[in-house]
Length: 131
Image (cartoon, rainbow, N blue to C red; front, side, top):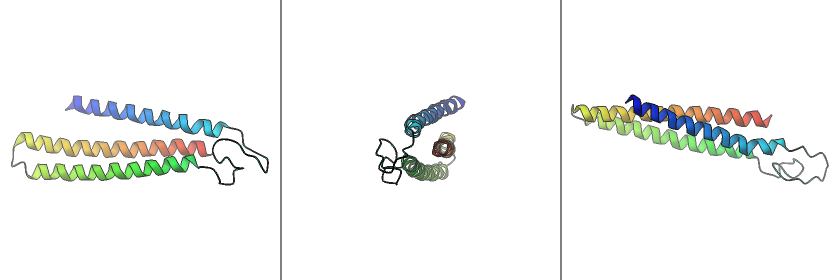
């Protein structure tokens, strides 16, 4: 069980690191571009038409995607907790079935915690680049 926990934590750590790096690679260059000061200035990048809101808002898009994914992950985690509870109730005292049900609930809770932590990291990174 400890080996499985280490594997899960390692995989989620790698996924969180990949998400952090991918977010910084996508967001950082967009905000590194110099601001446009002319009235009819047209440049490439975020809010490209004179910062009048005519362009795309990348941080808002990223936050929306992360919110949707967090909702889906939360729903899947709740479903898995319910499935684990049903497995636990229907195990009839079989020790292997009880262990399997407990593992299902445990890993669903771990997944939910990792999803909330990933949400916090992504929101932190996005807000640092919006300033």
